[in-house]
Length: 365
Image (cartoon, rainbow, N blue to C red; front, top):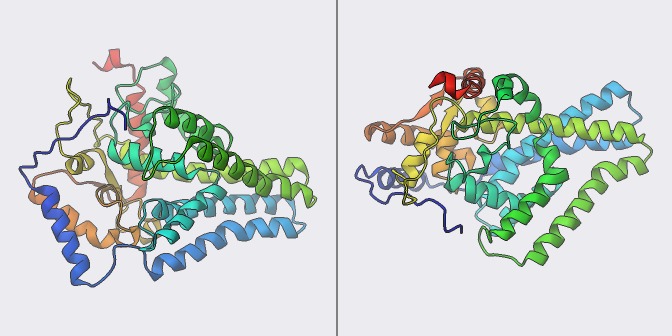
């Protein structure tokens, strides 16, 4: 791990996490249920893969009009995001199943979503979940110069318009994964000697990345062309698929951490954070649309980001139940529990925050 990484306080005078963890454990024990996924997740896995792959097979086998080809590509993107949020996400957190081999299989679904297991686990499980919203450590806050996600980032004049143009860039998320991001991340992470779980040799990781990329592009670009689909149709469909998935995933990710309420705390000169890790999650994370079952079902419980960040080892199918416990415990300790009642209000809050961050700091000081 990076020796310059911040450390969290171990002084929890409120006994927040100890109390919360005990109550959540009691919930699972009293109800005699496992913390991992259940039949609801297994059924959803089938639905999401069908939504993802059925339009693809129809494109390969039917001579459909161009407009239907575009619609099918959009549905593939919707299914792609759904598999990522519901199946791959739980799998790579080890919460899909109590069986490690099944978690590995489900986590490996990222390879047909354009990503890479090693990169995702380091970037998401290690950097994002550990150093949530800490500038310079949580890479989810790093959009280069094009978008300013925190007040710590350098301001450029074009940021005045970021609340307008950012939504168009959000759709490029998974497209960039497939083309460049994975290669840049692997080089960076291996150089920094970052890993999640048992470290693997760099040769194995690079070989896996290259082979899986070849297979990926063979499935989504080469095979359709071989079967007779015009090359420009294939490329357009590929881009639309990715743009749809990228837009969905980006919006869901941003609503949880880039809004006015959440903070971007930095360590002191000794590299120490003010709060414990669990309390830090409360200040840097927000929920949205907690009562909307459609949002909750489709996003894999990522609208319950507070619960997910504090208990990433618990499957998302349980977040709705333990949310009440987390909220009540936070309130008892006079700690924040941020949430937007609807997804619409969260989306508005996010882009309003982007507008505020796009204002020239010299004028707002």
